[in-house]
Length: 221
Image 1: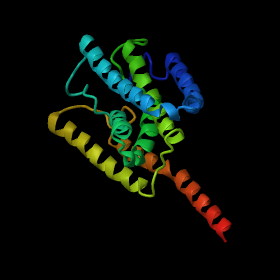
Image 2: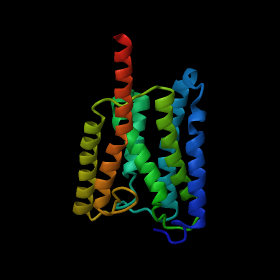
Image 3: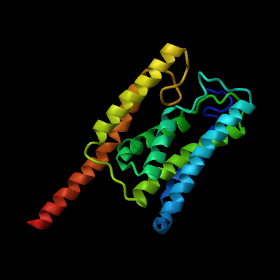
């Protein structure tokens, strides 16, 4: 981690502003349903633009390394799922996108990775903006599009975790690459922590669905 930023005053200020963003995010999705097609295109364009800008910035800064700089991190895969959901209407991916976005984005902002430069550099703002954009997309899907996780969410999440992390681990071993697993760390333990946290997130939704079912059942008696 970058000693000049990780849990420094600047980092804590970023976390405070991110917390405020989480509070106001639902309000930014109100009355958007009539413009949903435009909003979804804008979200997708912003995601792609941010990824391209990040890659160009790394090249410009002469920090690009194919063994560590490709956009294949866990939050990047969440971004690709977001595009598939919004453009190609692959709503079943919301089962995985829902938990991956929350855990990866919040985790990566708390455990900030070493950016290889001092704050404030443009790449910091791209990094922070990408997390905020994914959180916003998640809230938008839930509040505007009314996407809901299904009863297969835990199963889908475990399958996707096994596929993704197997790919990253094998890539690191076979090519001597050094792509982090989750929470900006290369520790294998972070994979299991990620899987546990993304599974726990579904429990409140399952409990809520059961309560709704019981309520409906009582009304029909």
